[in-house]
Length: 232
Image (tube, rainbow, N blue to C red; front, side):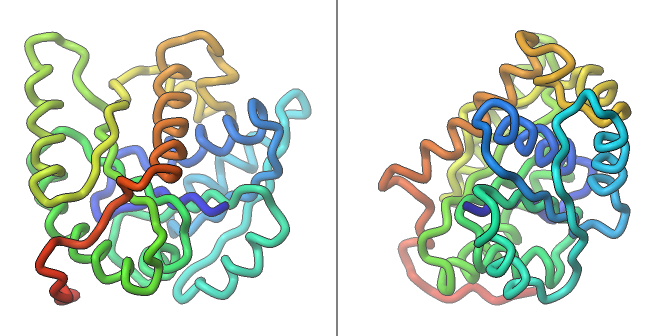
């Protein structure tokens, strides 16, 4: 099974999500996992290097791939239970190649206007890739949410923006927590740093909800007009 964490907007926590999902699958599901780092910034590759240097942590394999990677991904998926792909925050060949073959696509967005402005373009990309990968299960997830109750409306508004473009958005979210950064710096996941903590619960809820969606008939479909969206 192939899980892509990607999107057009940088800074939304894609690498953090991909890393924590990979650890969840590796440690709690006892699955064989490969991470694919498609980001030139090497965030996940550096995290893997830090992680695998610590013999107290369960090692995870990682490769770097760029450009037209569709065939590479199809070959790699035959050797692992899960391939978790971390794509950088831009619309490029690696992102579209991954979308063409991924089983599950998770698109993180912060509840901020500049992030939400990317939703129409991401819907266009999903609609186009859906034509070659009709079984894809794609959803937005709102990340780095403010924890103040007075700002809860921002989360609801962000979800409504996603729904207005007929793209599913997960009920689960992540909040801004130091635990995410602290864990990443040491090559760990929040599940390992604080197994019963709030951040670990957020990660479990996100991946479990995403995978559950893939089993339902409510997976994403192109808009009713069925028109082919232009690729900008």
